[in-house]
Image 1 (tube, rainbow, N blue to C red):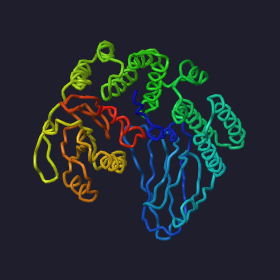
Image 2: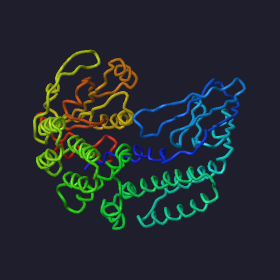
Image 3: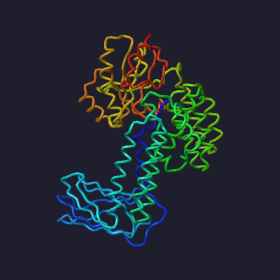
Image 4: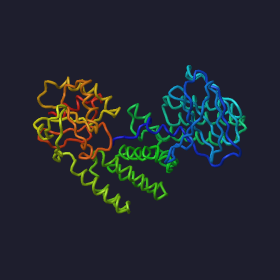
Length: 449
C-alpha cells in the first residue's frame, strides 16, 4: 500500500498552540533590533489549527525599538516575523513582561529576557533534545521509549524551576504531542531499514492498544491518517488481504466523534481510490463505505470516485484524451498506442515533480534506442506560459504534453504520479514506481517482456 503520509508533512505537530486558560493582565513585549530596515513586524495571534490565521502588526521605530501590548483569549506558543531576516519564537502569555534584543545581520543572534527568560532558555534546550530523538537511529521501539522517558524526567526537573504555571502546562502539552509523533511514526524508522510494519512487538502493542490518536488536531495535521495507514500495512504484513477495510474498522472502533470518524473514513477512501487495488477489495471497500457514509452528497461522491476507479483497474482500456504539445499542436493519447507508455503526470509548481526530472532524463537516455517504450510527460499546469518556460529551460528529450484535466480523468489526488500502459493502450498500473526508484529499470524491463 502506498504510504502517502510523510514525516515532513506531519511535523507541524511541533507547534501546539492552544491551552485551557489565560492569565490575567496583558502580555507585554518590548525590544531593540539592530540593523533593522523594516518599519513593522508581524505576530501570529491564532492557534495553528484555527480555520483562520490572524496576524498583528508591530510598529518598529527608526532606531529599531518597539513595544507590543495585548491581552489574549488564551495563551499561545507563537512567533514574530520581521521581513525575511528575523524569525523569533514567542510565548504569548497574559500577565508577563518580555524583552527581545536581536541583530538582524546575524541570524540566531538574539536574546529573550523578562518574566519568561528561563522559559526561553528551557525551550531552546528542549528543542535541541527533541531534535536529537527525532534524528537518532533506534534498534527497537523500546529503546526509543527509554529515550523519551529520560527526556521527560529531565524536562520535569527543569520545569520545576520555572514559576510560570501556564508556560509549564503548554510546554508539557507540546512535549507530549512530540512524543506521540515519534511513537506513532516509528514505522518510518523501520521502513528506512527495510523492515516490515509488524516486526516490533512493542510498537505493535502500542499502536493497537495504547495509542490514542482520535483528535481533530491529529486529523488536521495528518497524524491520524498516518496511524490508519500503518494499520493497513500491519494488516498486510500479517497476511491480510483487506487493509483498507481494516482501516475503516479501526476508525469506527477508535473514533467516537461522528464528524471526526466520517472525516477519517473519507481520508481512507481518498487514499484507496487514488491508488491501486492491490488486493481486489474495491467492491468490499465501496460497500462498507456506502453504509458508513449516511450523507447523500458523500454517497454521491463515493459512487463517482468508485465508478472512475473501476475504469482504471489493470487491464482496463486507458481513458483517452486530447492534449497539446509545446508548439500548440493537438493530438490524442491514443495516437501513441503501439508502444508501452510510461506517463509522468506533473506540474511546474510541484516541487516533488521537478525533483524527478533528473531521474527522468537518465531514464529517457537509458531507453532512447528501445523501440518498445515511450516516456511521456503530461503537465496539468493551468499556466501554459510557465510550462513553456520550464521546457525551454530544461530542454527535455522525451515527449511533452499539456492537459489540465488529466488528474480528474485518472482520479489522481496527488502528483507526481506515474502511469504505465501496455502497447494496446490498456492499463498496467496507474501507480507505477517513480524514476528515482532504484529498481525502476528492472521493473520496466520486466513489464516490457
